[in-house]
Image (tube, rainbow over all chains, first blue to last red):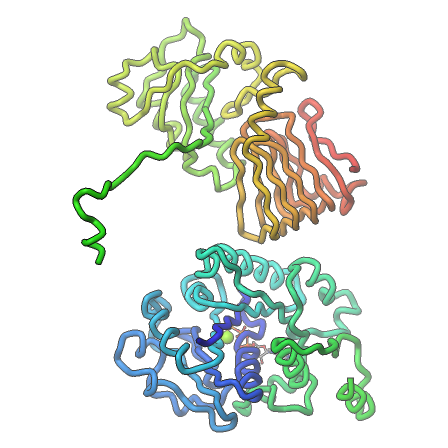
Amino acid sequence: MAEIIVVTSGKGGVGKTTSSAAIGTGLALRGFKTVLVDFDVGLRNLDLIMGCERRVVFDLVNVINEEATLNQALIRDKRTEGLYILPASQTRDKDALTQDGVERVLNELSEMFDYIVCDSPAGIERGAHMALYFADTAIVVTNPEVSSVRDSDRILGVLQSKSRKAEQGEQVREHLLLTRYNPARVQAGEMLSVDDVRDILAIPLLGVIPESDAVLKASNQGQPVILDDQSDAGQAYQDAIARFLGEEREHRFLEVQRKGLFSRVFGRKG
Amino acid sequence: MTSDLRASDTPLFRFKNSRVSLNELLLLDYDAVRLREDLASHAARLPSLFRQMPVVLNLEQLPAEQPVPPLDELLAICRESELNPIGLRGNNRYDEALCLSHGLACFGASARAERDSAEAKREPVTQSPARAEPGAQSAVSETAAAASNTKILTTPVRSGQQVYVPGGDLIVLSSVSAGAEVMADGNIHVYGPLRGRAMAGVNGNTDARIFCQSLEAELISIAGYFKACEDLQSAHWEQPAQAYLSGTRLDTAPL
Ligand SMILES: Nc1ncnc2c1ncn2[C@@H]1O[C@H](COP(=O)(O)OP(=O)(O)OP(=O)(O)O)[C@@H](O)[C@H]1O
Ligand SMILES: [Mg+2]
């Protein structure tokens, strides 16, 4: 039985897909058989970030409609052992995701994998609801700004009331992942601080991912940023995975860093 | 499998005793034009949870000498304001068959009918007559009723969520987020920051109060009298505070 993780946010463009790719890869690197499922039907960019867009033949909707088997649709990641991607369709819309169909696919994946990481589309409509409905665990991706925090709060409400766990009287495990954190802008009062966000959302903090050029670089190369272990963002995602698996790690990259080699070396030690 | 379960001797239904709390629309006077306007403006102020709220039309306090309002017109006005009339009280004014033909249930006379008439004149529409003098009989029974239906929430009320406790108090042991709405016919206690909207005494109970650990609300309201965030950002902002009505003024005070 796999653990189903949804990476969700409410607001768009906050780093769900970036984080899904990093988390899926991170779990696979730790030896867990992991599948990344792209629920963003109609947009499809998880495969781009994972650099496997040219290998997509069948997709989630094909499997739901029984036009292809799971094994035909799953793409094996070439870099990371034990990691698979189930891409989304670019040509369908989110109505193609039926609850029964999604459940069937997740059940089948559940027999094959340790972790199922679902990359949710933005919003709280059908697509996002389908992505979170079957989740055991939610990683709520939030940027340090008021509108993003508000939307995350809203998604937490949906998780508490409209997920399968909630309907069964149980609770979805909740984690906060604060991304695109820019300490300089926090210091200048242009962004909310970690403490502000924690205070409002009141759920455990899985990690803080700094705003980083490494993310753009990685996604241009079609490679999840967590594989760039020289980068601050890559290290921050590695820390988050460690915490997810129960290890204690101190939060890094919360303070304004001085540029240059010295601070990078120092930062890596932390 | 399913058909086995549905053997012919298995009952298809049973009646369950339920204590649904209903609001009454207490008509004090009838003027179709004004009623339509007043209800519409009232509906605009009320949270969306009250859309299609089932109500019993209470006609007991319409002046006896007045002609009976045309039922079709009255129902149409209610429905325009997204109320859902389900029954009539004081319906000896209408023929019972007429009520039934409109799909309305006939409720008997209310025990409070007598007492209400004295208070009713000042009461805005849809608010139940709880504005009795302190210590009066009705205030006591109101408190007792409130105590019987307390709801306790241990997790945060999140943005986009609405909670309503009919006929009782709401106690939130956590926070109420900005964009969330908590409502109760009785009092509201929030043992965390109150950042969303809180409405106590929504059925017209002017004695209801709101208590919170940190007042950061978008709006608070008691019995329909409200204050928005702008007017709340005074001395007690982000402090433990309570809100209550002094006459028709909503006041806040430290806890
Ligand atoms: N830590 C970061 N530092 C810098 N840029 C980032 C970071 N995280 C994400 N981005 C950038 O933000 C943009 C949006 O990221 P991403 O596609 O992961 O968000 P999303 O939440 O999946 O968006 P959508 O809601 O459209 O699916 C991308 O251009 C990405 O490169
Ligand atoms: Mg995305």
